[in-house]
Image (cartoon, rainbow, N blue to C red; front, side):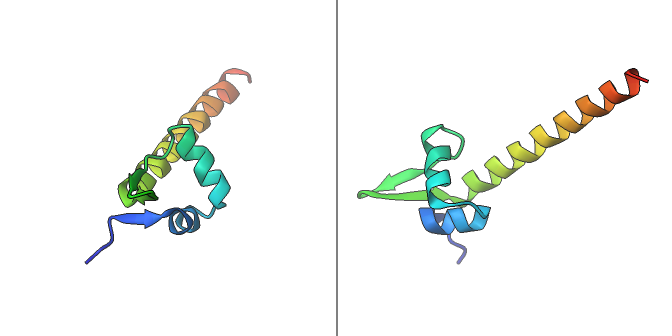
Amino acid sequence: MTRLLLTVPEAAEALAISRSKLYELIAAGLVRSVRIDGSRRVPVEALETYTATLLAASWRSRVAWASTARTSW
């Protein structure tokens, strides 16, 4: 069975970031997490949502840059 929740170290490793950076993202509300009896867990879905958000933001900035570059010629 596929795991639905990861520990913070596991989730940080999946994102290739440090644990402290993941805690910052959680505190900022950018990555959702849950507490189970004092242990913090990160849903796999939350990591997928976060990375999709990053990709969308990256795409929007590239499109904006490309349209600016074309109009400045």
